Image 1 (spheres, rainbow, N blue to C red):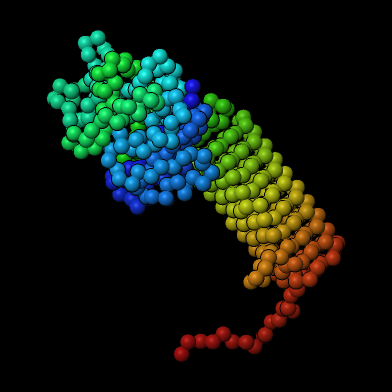
Image 2: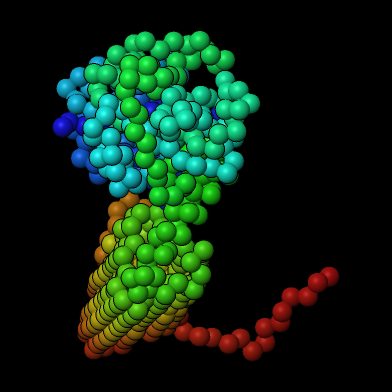
Length: 453
């Protein structure tokens, strides 16, 4: 059985009040449509078609790696019309599943259950019960419980509006039957649109029994129509991730103050303080402690690392037992070895710092190689950029760099060397020697400070 998927993503999203197409608004750091594409891929669909419209090429261009087939709905005349645009590209499919680009949290398990539950019939629906069904199409059944049709709220009678079982919009159907039904629907309704839901009545009229399945949670089938709904789904998604982390042995100071915008994996006995933001792929080793208000992006932390408050780590690796922060910034290609200390207001970029070295205060280390057991004093700067090109600084094992030193690259400081505080070093400093550059200190005894007239 070949399953084809149609994702409807052509809507304007007027209530978002945004120039950005609705399906490109982010949830957990990814566009809404990206979550739906992932769900379709998890089903093993033979072909995925995305029908887009508002925003034009901006929508497919947001997914350059996707293998989906993109179909523009130039004239947007309703959901039925949108599915019609995709049907020619699904001619080799046996069944067709219709999803929505603004319903991001649908679970592949639920969709698999829908497909399995409808294996013996030509048409299946995903429906749900709501205490307040306002705004949804109602599922109309006969006295024996068989589905008769779906009626949109704008077209519903008073009795039909009292129905609490509603349509989620997600259907699966025999491909050839769906093609036939779509050809028979019309726009004879208040909105003057071609409703996909009209195929239900047509199928019932042919004696087709419509099977229904319900999702596990209402959030799975919740659509995003405005920013408030987007925020509500964001919190639901983040709560689910937090719960999984805690069940896996991670302690969260407050599960409600964690934001994962990518993937986060933690070994056992990790502690995450409040307001942590993780982006991209983040890997945290056992027994790490992450302080409050930190940002971790595309980084790896070894076992026993402590990241103190308000630190930013991006594109970097940190070895076991290292301590970072507070207020430290590790930029891409920073490699911090085991037991290093990177302290407050220190920035490290494209530099390797070997085991046990310390850069504790107010320093910038860029395009550098620092050996083991080095102490870098406060206010030290590697002057790596000459206005056109970047140059490297190399510091040997056991060197001591005095405070307020400028190392003008390219330059090398030998192993065991000492650089006197306040020096500007622009030539290589030999190993095991003291090197410094200072003007002689002078005191003028008869000098008088100027006074205001």
